[in-house]
Length: 119
Image (cartoon, rainbow, N blue to C red):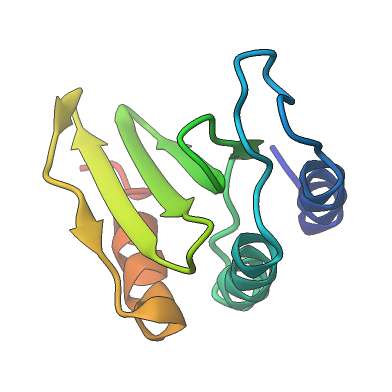
């Protein structure tokens, strides 16, 4: 299980990536993506819902990933500041939903946490 401290360290390492970090020409996450993700991580930590992993995205920006029982959740922080939420319940993907900035993070945290309780 990831700790908040470890995830902050991961975020710092991702912030230091350079162009072509994936050897396929990907741009590194922007300062906007890193700052937005950092604020979101703080909010998620306060809500008791930290991600399983934080990874850079070859599509741009970075992603927070959650694996909860048989479900998968992802928050994608794009370089322009957009945040997109995706979930896959029992392996079935839902549509990606663009969030209203950081205002929606608490709601998403509550949704993810609701899947931690087995029926």
